[in-house]
Image 1 (spheres, rainbow, N blue to C red):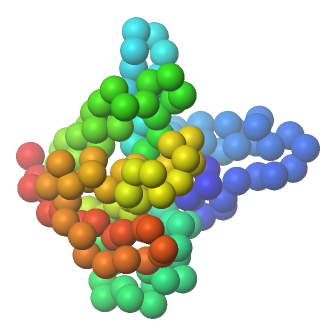
Image 2: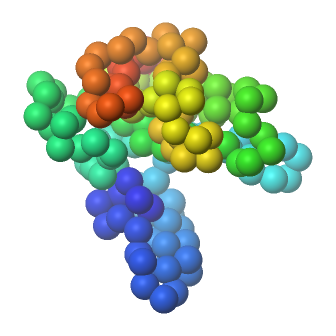
Length: 157
């Protein structure tokens, strides 16, 4: 929920409230993600959506200062559960998101990764720079000490 317009609820019952908000977005079709499973357990995901669906990106002020045009799609969050990192989960999630975006009409896709090692792996919520580069994303501009805007055009399928 952190990247959606309403952000995270931080009240006493925040876990329940955030879960309910996310379920409502999924039911309404205003939440998108490629999930990676190991048997019955989700071990990672890549959250994506149109820019208006995910307006609360990290380093937003710097991003907006250098913005020329909004992308068709944003990749806001790439997460891999502890114990599953460095096993290709992030790449599988990002590949899945790109495939889903192609099926939804394609277009310009942006992500906001950081170089591996710039923050501890458990806080690398936007994915690593090298994963994006392996999948054909190119560096557009820096928007933080370590954060890049990476872009790629995805053909529709």
